[in-house]
Length: 207
Image 1: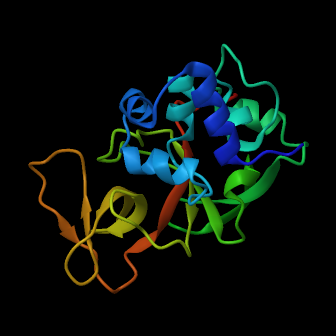
Image 2: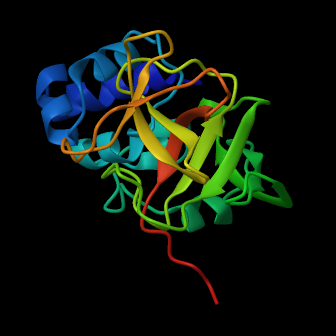
């Protein structure tokens, strides 16, 4: 029987005897994020890899029900996902360049985040957020509205990078982890490309 992300997360938490609060702390994320996933109010999260690692479960199983729950490789990288992309658990996402133009190339992402408005990017440089260093592949939903604490992909001062969205003001603000860097006001000029709905770090490129 096909299970939902919420059901798989509850199953894994029960198997590991871990509470929402403890899981949030272990994964380094806010507890409301876990709550929304458990309640089925979120279709996915940029933190699924971290959640899977904290639970010591297979990230593919958690994301889309593929394979077994237990895995010694809970944080398998995107190459492993792409090697299994012929399965129906994945959908193609067009890769866009760092100048925000389509490349005609595609990568595969879990169906748990499937949307016709998803675009993929590879970060060429470290962002100001620890979750998105250089080499990270991000899947961005350009129609998703950001909530407080969400990672967003934005065009700021002529460059593209990942920021954390902070609610407030007319349009919200963009922040980075370094608290010495002042908040940037999110303008109405289309600076935010979209919300990061999935990411995978430490990409190992094949030559």
